[in-house]
Length: 300
Image 1 (cartoon, one colour):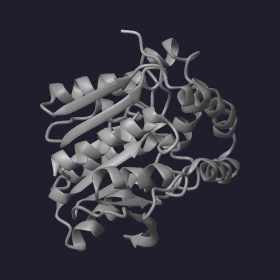
Image 2 (cartoon, rainbow, N blue to C red; image 1 turned 45 degrees about the vertical axis):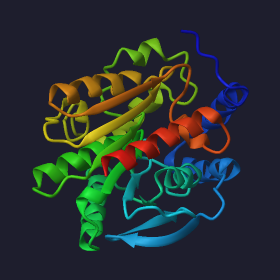
Image 3 (cartoon, rainbow, N blue to C red; image 1 turned 180 degrees about the horizontal axis):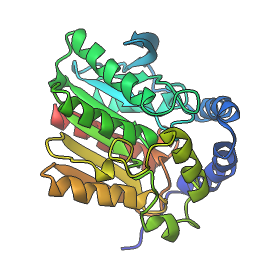
Image 4 (tube, one colour; image 1 turned 90 degrees about the horizontal axis):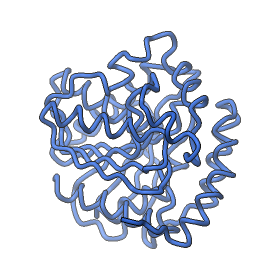
């Protein structure tokens, strides 16, 4: 079946490549403010959304509340950025649309980043944030953990840590182009290298080395593709067919299903890494966020 992208997608693809690839290649201290600056250009907040700073555990966070709050579900969001950059601010537009689609609050954690704080700092922050939600009286059955790219990785390893620590599991996981194999062994690292508009294999490999801080890249604590996935909650995985992390999603979905996990895998033809960030601008992004919202409504 031939898939035709919208006019806006055909325009935004090259623009994203022009703006983001050079920024992602920069050192973390330069990349972070520039990512936030680009995000300000593309952020479209649905009318009536309330955005407020908060604390979760010992870390700052942002709470996004839609104009029409329909449930007491909480989406606990862990942003992407290769564990080197990104923030709740860089993802604010997409998260506001996600909150609207799900009819519930989104709380985005500003976890520590490498190189200042490599593994396991982000995982410690994410687990502490989840415990803080439980301590606020929010039942695990009303929490969905979500994340993109490195945040997808963090969402999975957080769920594994919760399981292994005897804590109640969240209702579900929403994973956008999750980085599940820091060793970059997937075939799509080669087959999609020329088509990926956002990521480069060299950039991914460098980020993995910095974050791992000497730990073996195939360690299941870093690369959940190689972890025991039994007992994890239902998952929605969205990934673009034109990205080098494609196999990180397809292989992980297969491994999770083999472990008995309920997985919905949605591979979007011709789309790039975390295109959902353009919610409010591009119909393909809006459709993906609506699917994310429908998943959240279903699992809780």
